[in-house]
Amino acid sequence: MAKIFHVIPFDTWVDNKKSKSKYIEPESLQNEGFIHCCKADQLSGVILRFFSKSLKLYILRINESKLENDVVYEAPVEAPNSGQLFPHYYGKLPIDSVEKEFLITRTSISDAFSIPEHLLT
Image (tube, rainbow, N blue to C red; front, side, top):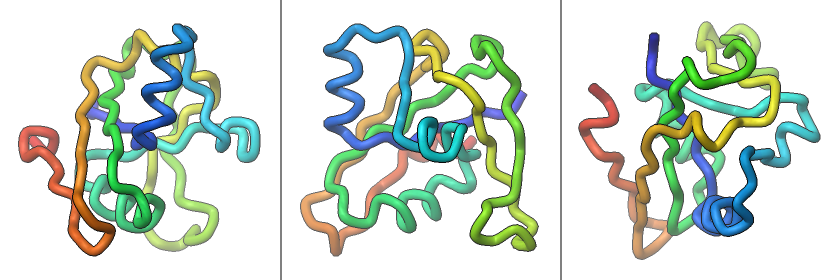
């Protein structure tokens, strides 16, 4: 089973953990009906495109065997003919499916995030 990841803003993840909620429910779940995830080789592009103004992020590695629903691989709506498929999760993301969390930081938005190499293997 492939590793999948969910990128989440630092404050959102910290607040979610403090709330002791059993689920992660990002805005995309309410607005689009699913939670955006990605594969390791898609992390850099996702971070660059959707988190360009962030200084601190968490990358959550998700254990698919602990999910209540199947992961669906789909083309992005904005680029349906791109040939890329991204993992989407249709449902609340159980906290216990997060097998590892990785904090990534940078000092300025002009700097690049450094993604831990061991994530990509």
